[in-house]
Length: 195
Image (tube, rainbow, N blue to C red; front, side, top):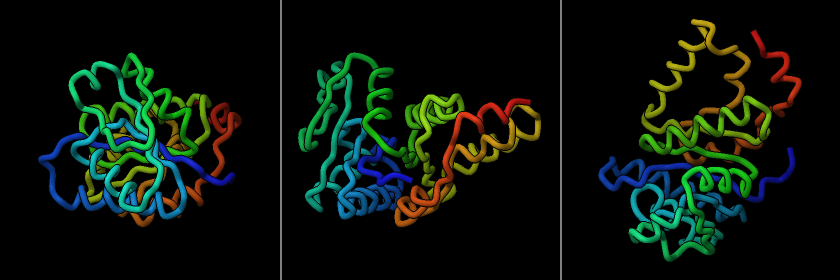
């Protein structure tokens, strides 16, 4: 696999969650900065988004924010991002984060994080990108979703090969090793996966 220079991270903006989630986000930011990897994220200054950014900043790393204008108007952007891309829509935000990134990571989050993760997985399923996707399942946060994927397979809504779209880890320390071990995803895999 080619060297990963940038990683897109999807995560929560909520500040009300258990502190261990904040610790994971901060640690991931530090790890990526220590490896010289640019972090690309939604440019939020609160919740796990803000903690991720603080982790990167604590190591003088590079963090790039992508945020819609209406969120800037509300003051939701992070002024400490290394650079910021202002877009018009949430759709543009997701697409730009993906295009600027060599791999994708989903930390725990709410509806928006789920939506970002699932759309990124859909794009990979369709062969629109072939990048590694890592789900950070700290405290079994994503276990219900992973069980839903199992149900999709058992009910034949999803071919089992598509469980190779992503890798699941439980700790920030395991994210980079998981990306490095990711098997190549090819268009042939997509063609072979049809029911």
